[in-house]
Image (cartoon, rainbow, N blue to C red):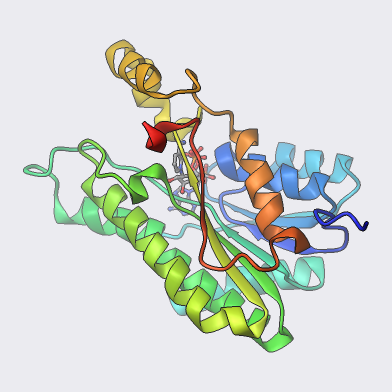
Length: 254
Ligand SMILES: NC(=O)c1ccc[n+]([C@@H]2O[C@H](COP(=O)([O-])OP(=O)(O)OC[C@H]3O[C@@H](n4cnc5c(N)ncnc54)[C@H](OP(=O)(O)O)[C@@H]3O)[C@@H](O)[C@H]2O)c1
């Protein structure tokens, strides 16, 4: 039986692929055979590119800040990946930010910044990549949401709202593109040891409260999101459309 999870020759774009969960996913896709382009904003991509190339794959990186992204910028990012790799089969929308503040205090500009990076850019990049994938009759779009697509969280109203919206976007795009060869699905990570959760993990009380509630009893490593991404990017997930795969150590089961 052919290896259903083999990504040899596939071309992937991972946003925010130089650090955290994005890096874990980029390296997982490369280990499964894909060439990988990544975007970065502030984190130097050299080490991730070297790791991709050490796996025998082509790597490429472009600097892009998604705050206030417009259609031209999204087209440019997708065009970079397509040109650098010679095609595009997989888009992983991973880049995202969190802003913690009480709702009574939070300024509109912080709400807009989070929604711009976490939701607008995912829409724009999925649209740009989707045009290419629908035209070629195949493609995989993976949207990194969160367990906070199912819960409100604490003092992260823009983050929780944007992540709920990403699940809506996953389903909306699925309904349009499933019949045209493009699989659109989401991964909902639980609490993972990255910059995103640094403040929580540094706070002994919050950290203990979180760990006490996670059935697995620990935070995830970024590399632990790679399996779901490889699955959704592969032929093994050919009939998966509009799904949300939760990878959370049991958090939502609690
Ligand atoms: N960690 C968790 O517990 C957790 C749980 C559920 C969901 N998630 C989601 O997983 C995704 C990755 O987060 P992470 O945990 O790996 O955190 P992270 O290490 O902070 O990574 C965030 C990534 O997004 C990029 N990014 C941030 N702002 C950007 C902007 N304005 N324009 C372009 N790129 C930008 C960053 O690029 P630079 O580093 O180059 O600036 C970085 O690669 C996010 O969507 C997050 O919401 C995380």
